[in-house]
Length: 449
Image 1: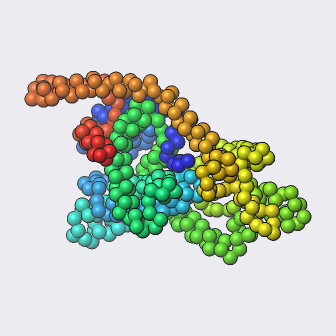
Image 2: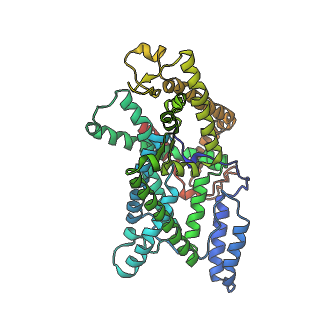
Image 3: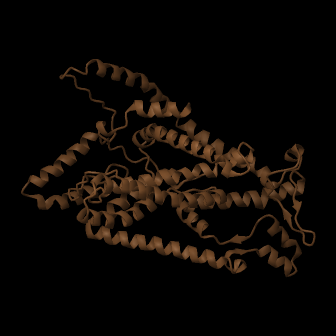
């Protein structure tokens, strides 16, 4: 199971029906305040708006935010991709080990601020380099671009913990991954291109129509806003960056130390220890994999997953390896393989067998448990999809109306008196900033080819 923290959506937020015109009115009010003699109330008014803020809606326009002429710059792309590559590498290890991957939004937002903010001040005041290279004053919009680049680069690691390992297990790629470098690049680029096109309709359905609040992106938005809140934001940024750096060094030191004392700091084989002390039957605890392994990556996964997911994992483990697996061995539905001539140690983790009959009549407990586990996830996913089918059908039924409105607008494009108002349009993004339909539809079509 590949699971990202930003996939877990909270219940739908209240439908405040804010359209892009509201954003324009707020922005216009902000500019009018600059010209008004009571400009000293701008900060107070902004704080009042934040008190009435509903999570998931666009932030009210901050009148104190710096003007950003260039948001997407070379520096943001380089820094974001580098930060995303770091998270992507760790996600490959974590994903292949636990099945979990986590988005690099917060990591990219905080470290992007810590890296680019001082550089932007230096190059803005001491360089003749163009702003499209460094962006000038580093603000929240450019910070969003950094974390977006980090998220995009880090998200590619999901492909290398799911589809590509399966292709190697099925023998669809070469034995040596170095021989498949061209295929891997092509597959990665194609999947990334497909994702860029497919994310547009998903945003419209989940964020605009369903009005779901996604925890990690929401936390990232609040973090970026706090980082750019004057001196207090700079102090918060330094503290958060220092906390991340200390955590990184601590995990690195712990990993190095476990290499010298693995049985003390890393894994505790309680069943094996008790067996050596004379409790012979407790060796089953070791054979079924019930031992403790202290891995910082797993600690972080538990902290990010929350109690619901953690309890579910614990319950699934007890059900699988405390009840079902022993029952399979006892009834002969699955077999264990001896791995030691001296001690009664057995392996129950085999996923590959010598003959086809072994897959049917002599599987390991792990291979047997694979199928009900996958079935549970598939059933839950399709049930969730079925419960949302009404919205999908209604959305599909609206395609005809959308096409008819587009045709009518095109016919009357030269009529200055023609005014079109979509009452169902509650997208906070202004029309001129939205991705045209032909762009993402064309992207999906080309990626399929």
